[in-house]
Image (cartoon, rainbow, N blue to C red; front, side):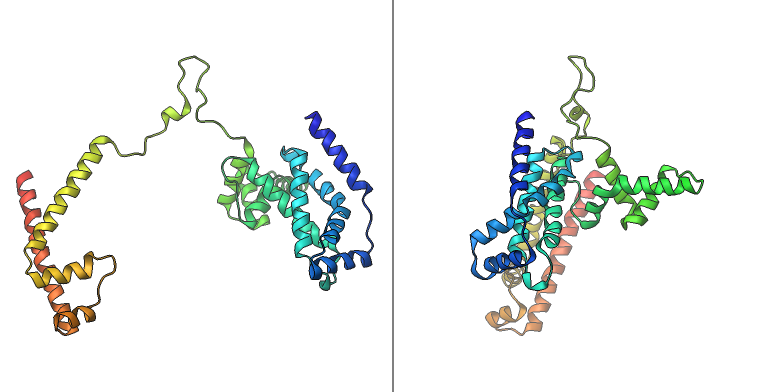
Length: 292
């Protein structure tokens, strides 16, 4: 941590010594980069506003991220802003860069807050960074009116204030209420204590279920084979070409090959399916009689 702090101080001092750009110089540098890909102009523009990036990074230290990482993300946002800045819009670069710097830092904080993804939509991001502030504001306003909000009322008001669903507020409260918890942690301090992962239900199929599923699939394949063999060669050909190929044939193409009309092929296909259905129903009745 001492090294981190020392590095922060060096970067801050370097940023503070950078030149201050007036509007005309800033515009010239922006044009040089945008139209001529002048990397020296880009470097000068970014360096001049690194103090802005560091200042914004410092505002996010309360989220527990290392300051060096926050500064790095702020720098990336600043670089992105410089690459996309259009000087012809008549806006100062610092005004434009603030949005990109903030977005870069916020994305980093949310990615590293938890192993479980905290949120990705703009509304979820607004909720993550404003939940506590909005809660405090609403509670303060209620107190001034002589009211006391219960937790459910407060969540509903937060949802309306931020413009998100109640379920989003409840989810974010859970995310912000504590850090990640390892499933390999023991439930007790005893040496023989079980890990929390031991009490999770196994969602995989049991061996008996697998054997039963494989047996049913094998029996169904046998039935389908028997039903196919009950068809005449032309009907079997139509069923295979229409239903069992990766790229099924059209009725028209089969008709041309067999010398039949499209409608006649459709009738043969329907008749073949009817034969197969009767054959399969016979097997099903035999199985039902056996177990009855």
